[in-house]
Length: 542
Ligand code: HEM
Image (cartoon, rainbow, N blue to C red; front, side, top):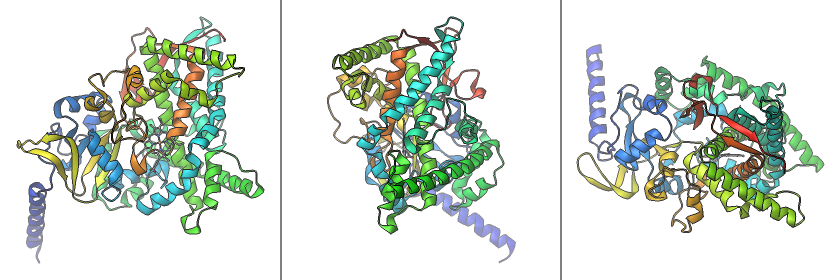
C-alpha cells in the first residue's frame, strides 16, 4: 500500500468512526446542555472560571437535573443531579460504572493506589481490611483526640486575640488555622502521629501539606487543563508514566510530599506491627487496620505498600475536606447571626444540663441530643459539599433511570436515557444537594431549620448520610463519614462556646473556587490561595 492509499484508508476510517459515533442509537447528543465554548478545550475552563454553585444553579434553572457538556476535542459528557439517576450509578452499578482511569491516575500522585482509586476485587479487598477501623464505636473512641486538637486551636486564638489591639477581637484567617488543626486531628486520630501543625513544628512532612491542593489544581491554565484531559486518549499507565516526569511546580510538590509520606508511613506501620506483637496496640485507625489485616485470610491481606497507600489516602480524604467544611460553617455563622445565637444557646443549655447532672463537660453522646447542632452541620454539608463532583465512566451501554422525563433537542421525550459505553458522567454533589425537587423551593438558601421540620424519610436515600450525596453513596461511599461528623461537632462546640464570628467590615467578598473541591478565596486575592478572614471575638469565660 503506497502512502496515498494509507492516507485514504485513515481518512475513511476516521469518517466512518465519526459517523458511527453520531448516528448510533446509544447517544447523548440529543440531551440539552450549555453550548460548547470551544471544540478544543470543551467546558473545562468554563467550570474553572465560575464560582462553585453559580454554574450549577444556571444548569439547574436552564436545563434541569440532567445536562450534556463537553470534554476536550468535542467529547460529549453528562452532568447529573437527578436522585434516581445518581442512585442507579452509585448503588446498583458496580458492573456498569467505574472511575475513569485518566482521572484516577492523576489523583494517584496524591493518594497512591489506595481504596479511593482501585477498582473491582482490589477495592473489595482493601475496603474489607479497612472497615473494622471505621465503625461507630471506633469513631466515638477518637472523640478525646478531637477535643484536644480543637482546644489547642482555641488556645492559639486566645493568644492571638489577647495580643490584638482591642484585646478581645481581631480579623483571623480561620481557614489556615482550621487546616492546621484538622491536620493535627487526622494525625492524632488516624495514626497517633503528631504533625505539630498548630505549633508550627519544623516538620518537613507537615510543611509539605500547606496549600498543596491549591498549588496542584488552583494555578491551572487552559493548556494545563487540556493536557490533563488528553490523558483519556492514552492507554492505562501512560498518564502515571508522564506525571512521573512532569516538572511543573504543583506535581513536583506532590512528589516531595509522597516521598516524606512514604518515609513516615513505613516507620509507623513497623511500630504498629511491633505494638501488636507486644500486646500494646492502640486505638488509632492505622493500629486498628494493621490489627484487622493481620487477622485476615492471607490472600485477603493488604501488603505493606497497600497500607502505605491507605495512609496517604486517609490523610488526603480526611484533612482538607473537614477543614473546608468547618471554614464554611464559621462563614455561614458569621453571615447568619441568628443561627450562631441559636447554636450557642443550645450549647450553653446542654452544658448547664451536663453540669447539673454532676458531669464536667460534653461527652460524644451529648451531641445526639443537640438537634440544632446536628441541623447546622447537615445544612453546611448540603450547601458546601467538599467534593463537588463524583466522576464516573460507563463501562457498557446503559439506560439511566430518570425521576422526570428529559425532553431532547429533537423534541423526543426520554423516560430512560440511553448512555453509550465510555461516557464520562459527572455526578454533581452541589447540583443534587441544591435540587429543588429534593430539598424544596428554598433549596438554594442556607437554612438549618429545614432539618428540624423534616420528618419524612426518602424511599430510597441517595447518600450514606442524611440523603445527602456529600459523602457519596453505595459501595464506594466515604468510609470516614462518622469520623468526619464527630470531628465537625466537636470543633463547632469548642469554638462557638468560646468565640463569636462576624464578617469583617472591609467589604471583602468571598469566592468559592473550584479547584480541588470547594475552596474559599478572597475576591481580588485569589492568587494568594485559600483564605477566609473573619472577625473573631473572645467571649467571656464560662
Ligand atoms: C467533611 C468531610 C468529608 C467529606 C465531604 C468526604 C467525602 C467523600 C466522598 C464524596 C467520597 C467518595 C469519593 C469518590 O467516589 O470519588 C469519599 C471517599 C472516601 N473517604 Fe471521605 N469525606 C470526608 C471525610 C473523610 C475522613 C475524615 C476520612 C478518613 C478518616 C475519609 C476517608 C475516605 C475514604 C478512605 C474514601 C474512599 C472510600 C472508597 O472508595 O471505598 N473521608 N469521601
